Structure formats: C-alpha cells, structure tokens
Image 1: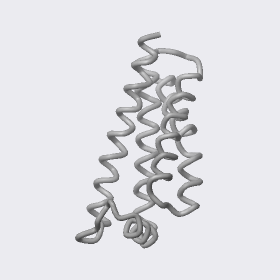
Image 2: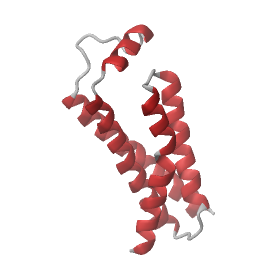
Image 3: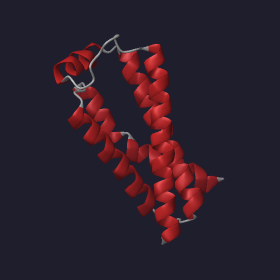
Image 4: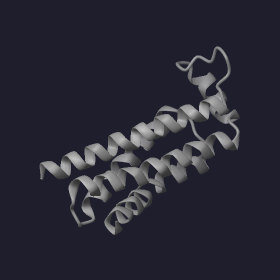
Length: 132
C-alpha cells in the first residue's frame, strides 16, 4: 500500500516538474510583458486574453508530456496492474488544473481541454509502462 501511495506521489511530482519546465520554456518563446503585475487580476485577465494560440499549445503539450510521464513512472514504481492508481493520478492532475482555472482566467476551449486531457494521458503512460 505504501509503495502505491509513493508511486502516485512520484507521478505527481514528475508531472508537475515537467509542467513547470515546459511552461518556463513557453514563457521564453512567449514572454509576459515587462512590468506585468501578477497580483493584479484585471491585468492578468487582459494578459491571458491576449496570449497567442502557440502559448496555449505549449502548455497543452507540457500537460500531455507530464501526464504520460506520470502514468509511466507510477506504474514502474507501484508494479500494480489495476486501473485505480492511474485514475487517482489523473483525477489529482485534473483537480490541480481546475484550481488553476479558478485562480487565473483562461479561454473556455482551453479549460475544456484541461478537464479532459489528464486522465487519458496518464492511462496511456501507464499502458506504455505495462508493455515494456
């Protein structure tokens, strides 16, 4: 049981690290305006609305990569063959995205993708690990 909990935790850490790295790379390609006050909700709303499509695509790519990695790592560590662990991991990643959507304004299409992308991607990573 401890091994399974640690596996989910390791998957979460790996996914979040990948999300962070990819989003940082994205901010190099699409930097925020100089002097943007991240605490100013109105300024953040305007900033998020003005982001180019490519900036959002980079974030989605990071989510896919991190979620695949999370599922893969979780299976490798847990050595569990059931589907409950990837479901839990995908649900936790989805919940973290929902919190992000609550804190920052995002386009509706991006929110929809964010709600549906994590669970399937984690399961794909989990399945890839099982096949190796």
